[in-house]
Amino acid sequence: MFRSSQFNSTHSAIHVESVSKAYSQSWAKRRAGVTLPPALADVSLAVAPRESVAIVGVNGSGKSTLVRILATLTTPDAGNVRVFGHDVVREATLVRTFINRVSVEASFFKQMSPWENLVYAGRLYGRTGKEIEERATALLQRLGLPRHAVHRPMNGLSRGQQQKVAIVRSLLSSPAILLLDEPTTGLDPRSKHEVQDVVQEMHRETDLTVVLCTHDLAEAEALCSRIIVLDHGKLIGDGTPDNLRTQNGLSPQTTLEQIFLTMTGRTFLEDEESREEAS
Ligand code: ADP
Ligand code: MG
Image (tube, rainbow, N blue to C red):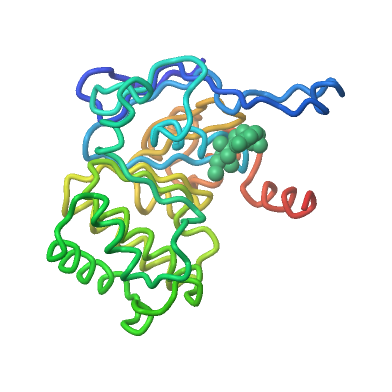
């Protein structure tokens, strides 16, 4: 099994050791003799405080499952997961105070405006009205959300605008770790850049540890110094793009897409095409 060279149990923001997770399958599938491979199989990794790490892999490789385990939304079948030394299963309530997650489809009170959603969330996080107003105003401005959109019902906003509100909301809790699960998937190029810029700025200017799941290899390389490759639930690579090139005997000019192809035998494009055929 590939084991990350950066695997280190002490002083980690995130410590994942030998984690496996399989989803139960339907009765009909079991009866038909279909056996699903596990979503995660013996995955170990560690993330240091203030690191920015991208988790890349084709659809179904286990990225969201790993993020959901870190966010205490699901539990591993085996293994050990710690956030700042705290167990995600036994100390889930405490772990939730360190993390926030933005997923590809953020949920909101859709009849309420972005501002109302932010005030509601900020109150839940224990912020005062003044703190929420100052922080939300600054973040919304930085993300380029038009002023008129802030007080309209959420369901009238574009997906890009909704995703920006989701990022602002996640940052209102001042998390130590931000888990971003495909935050720019489906966004137009401009919104995508605005979201990427704010993630980069937050990482540069604060103590935020960032874990970014993405399909977009250019985004992974631009935003994160370290790339973790998942394939069929297994961790098959972990390091800087240069580390990955060296580990796979590739030249310094090799693109991340070519590295990915060498490691998995597939390109992201082929994955997109097979998904389109299946749908
Ligand atoms: P990714 O985020 O990389 O696309 P996921 O973690 O969502 O991967 O999925 C990993 C595997 O687990 C896939 O085979 C997927 O079909 C399966 N899976 C994910 N969520 C569920 C679920 N709630 N129930 C059953 N199977 C699931
Ligand atoms: Mg996913």
